[in-house]
Image (cartoon, rainbow, N blue to C red; front, side, top):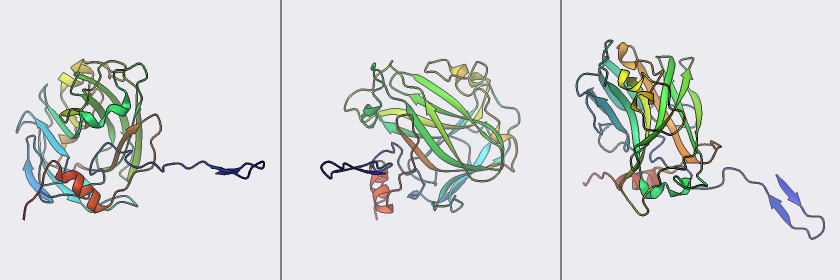
Length: 265
C-alpha cells in the first residue's frame, strides 16, 4: 500500500517481504547437491549423497532402520527440488535411544539478531513444505549447541499432498551465543524417529534441557518400507511472522554451500 501526504506530496510505501538474507538456513530448497544425488543403505549419521548442508542423523548406527536419501525433483509449485527420505529396512521395535533426524547446523555468528540470552530476545519462525506417505504427528526442534538448550513443536500431516507448515518458537532470554564464533550455534531438527529417551516426558514447548521432552508425540517413520518423506522450502527467520520463502539463485546457494564443502575439478 502507498500513502500520499496531501500536504507535501511525499509518499510512504508499506512493502512486505522485501528484506534479503532473512533465511538462516542454507540450501533450503535443495538446489545444490555436490556429493551426488542419491545414496542407498544409509543407517548412520552422515552427509550423504544428497542435498548440501543437510545432515542425515541416524542413531544408534545400523539400529534405527535403513534408508535411501536423495535429491528429488518432486516439489511443490514454485520449487524445483526436495530432500527425499525413503525407508528401505523397517524397524518396528525401536531402542530407547533411537533417533532419526534430518537436520541443519547454523553457525553461531549468524544467529545474533535473535538476541538469544538477552532481555529483548526475539522469537524464531520456521516454515517448510512436507509431502509424505506417512501421515500423523511429527516434531521439529531447535537445539542450542552452545548452551545445551532446546525447544520443540509438533506439526500434523493429515494428507499425502504437499503442504506448507509454519511454527513460531518462543524467544529465549537464557543462553547467549558467542560473538564471532564460526562454530555450530543451533541445529534445526526435523524428527522422523524417536525412542523413549526422547518421548517419555512432556513436549518441551518452552526452552529447557530435559531429553525426555524433546520429541514427545513423534511417529515412527521407520515402521514400514512404504514410508517416503520429502522436505523443501525450509526457512528460519527472526520474529513471529513466517514470511514467503526467500529464493536465491543457483549461483548464490552454491557459493554459500562451498564454504563448507567444495568439489575441486
